[in-house]
Length: 330
Ligand SMILES: [Mn+2]
Image 1 (cartoon, rainbow, N blue to C red):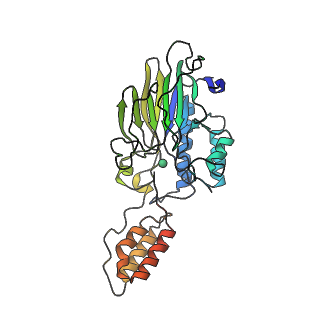
Image 2: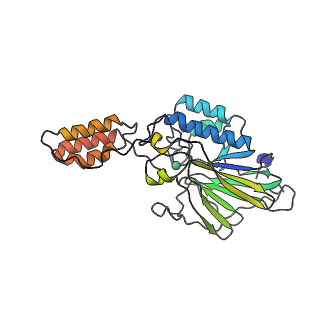
Image 3: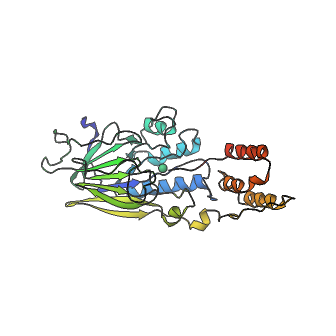
């Protein structure tokens, strides 16, 4: 392991920033200026980390769309991250192919040294005088079965104590509350004290496996209007290194009220068949009034109502609707 990443730092801890999902348009039912709002949330996290001597760590999905992100947004990110030393991993949304490539926006930030990916080498240094290791496995990359503490002394500042080892992941971890998509069972990993998993957008309970604690902190943005998102407050996970180990706190990121960020639910009841189709048209007009950038709500409305048309017409309506809409995922 190269010691070029070993740092005697002034940090006293880390700030884990979950799935920012920066993008140039508003997702789902959001009605605010999402691109600007979410960039400001990320900027707030970085500046909070800096003023509290915390190392900012991105848990993956910095971007929602891997490519074609607005140049102004990438430019501002380069400014926000200049000289910060931010580390992190890439998530499923950061890459169009199974692995991050030079075509993906995040690779620009890596080349600009705005962020260093942990897949190449863990961060090794001291925080609050204690030896700390932060490693990570980006989306689809294997989570190791053990961490081998370097024997060159780099991971133990005073040459005696064992370092605290954190590991960052972006995987479908099978934790309570994520049974639907969870595939990888949390397990004890030799010499890894804490695994912090991004990817899951809501905060879920810890799972302790032997000496390894698995944490699901949730993300800093609200992408969907679902109940989970309604109950979820945008927050980042602060970990302070202490002489006895570490403490953790969820730091709420300033955010607007749910109702100011999302459109209210629109027209759930099916519009009955009407020979004049006027109610169908009225329903569409209602949707248009609360138009979402991603077209959320449109497909659900159409699915409930197109049966009144002849099949080829209904099929064509659905085909067109799906062509112009996208679904938000974690
Ligand atoms: Mn995500």
